[in-house]
Every structure is written in structure tokens, then in C-alpha cells.
Image 1 (cartoon, helix red, strand yellow):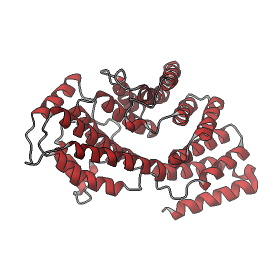
Image 2 (cartoon, rainbow, N blue to C red; image 1 turned 180 degrees about the horizontal axis):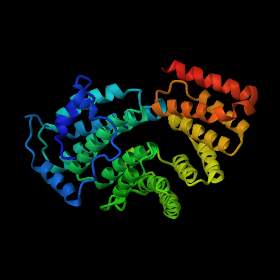
Image 3 (spheres, one colour; image 1 turned 120 degrees about the vertical axis):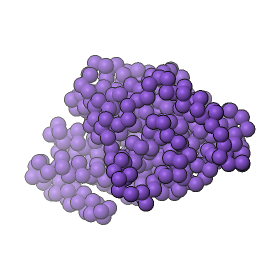
Image 4 (tube, one colour; image 1 turned 45 degrees about the horizontal axis):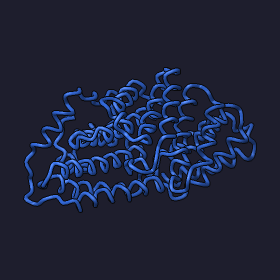
Length: 362
């Protein structure tokens, strides 16, 4: 994870790189091992002693601009999916943000603030790549964001990023890698120093990683702690990056954990709770939740209910550019195929709609 962050930002999303370099962007199940404890302090020390490349200075206004960009792009991602605006975000990181990081910093606190704001924005670009199913690029960007969080000396932010990388590994069914990352998100006081809402987010993804590794009792205990943490959350004194995580999100991740533990009835209840409490700005995740709910229902033999749920999912997809949403449709058709005859005309119509949806997005 020892990288030149400015150079890495300039290279971010470079489609002109040769094939040898682009092959590095394939997702690696092993990934880069989590750095040892001393790496975090050494990375911060190097960042504090690094010489400026530019004669210009960073001001608080530059930090505020990067933070504002984070808010804008994060909300756009939730509403329209990771493919919407990703190229604009990458261009902003490669030009403006890279330029700010190369400048002089009048104070250590301002340097930390800028590197923290930049790390959050790189993390968001990684999450958007993950949502777009560009998994190699997402992994590379998560690693870069972790390095930048270390340069900012921000433990909770590093935990937040490692949690997102663990989520990716869970979705790609790499249990060992997922648990390593999820454990890392809680280590070195990252969990202890985080706000209650962020603790709940770290904890529920840890529960998912435990479930994927078949550590059932520990997974259920982690779910309980996450629910307790969220109950203690207050809207004040917490980072803006956790604005999306609330009751509906906790229910969604809890349901995924219970589903992976084989408790389909409990998972169905939690998915239904998530659907009932999800607000409009989080349209992308709402569609994914409906897709998962339908899959749990059909696994329990509830074909009519699953078709109704999946029909709602298709109704809600307009305008969303997301690889995960597209995969929801693929998995829907796969789960529907064995029971297509039992579902009658409703199931056949749903399957046709899903096929047309996939054709329309390529």
C-alpha cells in the first residue's frame, strides 16, 4: 500500500494505460494484505515530512470544495447509481484534487483535513466502481483511499473504507478476504473512535463477513451490537459520509446476513422492513433490496409473492445506472427459470420484461 498518492490520483481511470498495467486492475481474491500496525504511523510520518511540489498553498476553501463535491457525488450515486457521474468525479480527482495535494500546507491540521477530504472522495469513486461492477478498479481505489486516510491520520475513515472493501469481497463471495478486511475495519481503535452510526455500519458488514465464513453465533452477536450502536446514533457530531446509513440500511444488511445463515423467514421480514422504511433518495439500494427479497421469497416457494416483488423492482429501475441493479435482473431471471411454469402468465410476463430491461442496457 506504499504509493505516491498524487501520482496515483493523476493515473486514476487512465484508459490509455497499456494492457500489462490494465491487467493489474483485475480483482484479486488475495488482494494486498492488510498493512502491519507500524505501517500506519510510518505512512503518517512520511506524509508530514513530504515536500510540496507546487508553490501555491491550500486554503480552507479548497477543503470545503472537496467536501462539497463528496456530498454532491454521494447523493447522485445513491439516487442514480455508480455509473452516473463517475467519469466527472474521476476527472475532478485527477485534476483539481491531485493539484491540491501537491501544494503547500500552512498547517498540519489543514493538511490532515485536505487528505481526509480527498480520501473520502477516492473512497466514493471506488464505491461507484464497485457498484458499476468494475471490481478491479474498485479494489485499486479502495487501497489508495486507505493510504490517503492513513496520511490524514484518520482511523475511523480508514475503518469506513476497509468496511466498503469488505462489502465488495462479501458480494464477490471471497470469505477469507472479506473477514480480513472487516476485522481490519474494527482494529486499532477504528471502531472505538467512530461515531455510533458508523460503528453500526462497520459492525453489520462484519456480521455479513462472519456469516459468509459460517461463524453463525458470532455473526448474530455482531448484528445485535450493530442494532445497539444505531439506536445510540444522533444526527449531530457524526461524519457526513454516513448520511445514508439508517434503519432501512441496517435492515437490508441484517437480512443479507440472516439469508446467508440460512434463516430465510427472518431474512424476508428484514428485507420487507427495509423496503417499507427506505426513502426515495436511495432508489438504487431500494431496487437491490427488492431483488434480494424476491429471491428469498421464491426460495421459500412463494412464487406469486416473488413475482410481485420483482415487478416492483423493475418498476423502480428507470434512470438508474448501476451494475448491481443490472445484476439484480440477471439473478431474478436465473431464480425465476426453475419455477417459470408454476408462475403462469404473471411469471412469463415478468421474465419478458426482465429480458427487455437487460437488452436495453446492453
